[in-house]
Image (tube, rainbow, N blue to C red; front, side, top):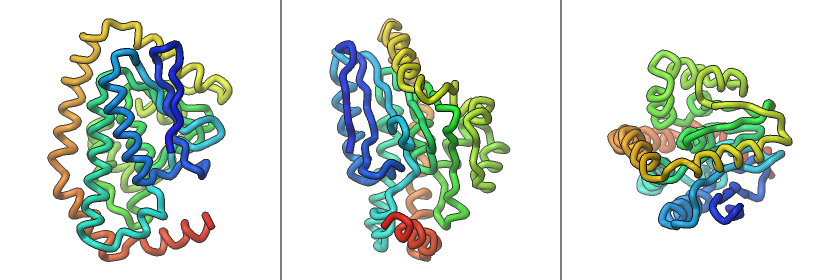
Length: 251
């Protein structure tokens, strides 16, 4: 579910490549991305990477409902949630510059993955959201991520309100770093990754590691509570109506 291309022998372009253009985050995609980042982080030839959902495709609209709809046992739900945290930690621990390019939507888990990168570029038509609560899904990870990035007041606004955030507003908030026209998106992202790749590697890696470790510690600290929140929500079937509607729409 990933497409990769090595550019200029040192820049890795990674595309989330679900068969659906909405790029829902399946467990397979999660596992493949962790394996790829782990291997790439140890590859001395690769100096930086770009992560994208592709052009005319969403970055990712969140968890794959075909996987989510099967979560009906406590141990399976807990494993699913902890695996998502493992993915976020894996991205934060990636030692090399990671630029994220977003077209169309980055929603829920998709947005949270994007926020783990070092620099985010969105197309002018892109937008982001964390709509979990209104859909009956707990949002402890999204809440802790937004609180660290925006502070408590803005976190509450966007997690509880569940509203869509335009690309221009995302730049104002710092959740995206810049926007551009659609045809420029990948080239702008690649240019930024090339610029970062030219930095001396050791100072960049050490600074990123120190700063991201505090983020990792926050995520690790809420593992048991986040797992319990998802277990309780799924066992109560809080999001069942939403899941059925999504599955009906995607048939």
